[in-house]
Length: 355
Image (cartoon, rainbow, N blue to C red; front, side, top):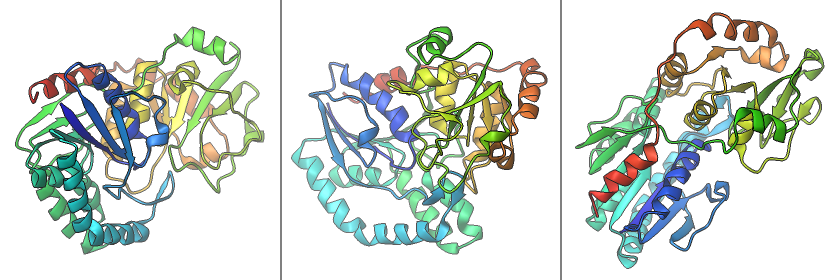
């Protein structure tokens, strides 16, 4: 089987989880080739003879000034530019799939590859916890353009042969077939104890790992001089993060750093929630701007994680004591549900049905 796998370049969550799926698929005998199409290829830390990569954008996502604010005007402009080039892109990608004998298209989470599959005459599988029509419809209150676009995308998603829906899911379009699969995410290779030893973490210090995804905290300076002496902020790969008062360790496998931390401070996103679940690291979360997925991720935090909300101003002023007291009292007494895991195996099982 030769698969064309498109992964959205919006943030790191899509490439993080689907990269894990690709690793598992590459070990499956029935997979002959995977043609990976994404703008986040540099995120992957592996190569393979079966893996062919192309840097190409097949969805726009949402433009962001930083991890916590949405730029609607730029998003609309980029969407309109994408629509202008869509016919040519469809022709080129259809020819590419035919030339390479692609037998199935997987998409996380754009609707456009489903249209390509329809044009080629092959089957397609949607993979994700939200669809872009749901995200854009939230902005119809600001501009009717987004409502009209949502209607169009909803039709495109409806042509998928099947949808494999991840945990923390938002309302979905009417897919022909839809199956809920287990959690997909990167796992630590070390226990919490060994991870803390690896990074030189001290027992008498509370380590809070900061993460604000692909868009960072550019333009925001944290007041680390206000920190308690028993708290150390940690960051790795955060665009725009300052160096004063923040520990930036050398990291070969980021989920090990997630496991080492006492707490993870972030804006909610699928990828990091999955990594914290596997690492068993509590989450301090803040707002992420007007993004419709947020409500569903917060609901997941309440159900499956030790977690607590912290206002962005308190993060900036480094006032963590109150939220740490909260998460260690009320939240720790609340029973948490367990998630179905190993979604990678679910994907392999479903693809076998198409072989």
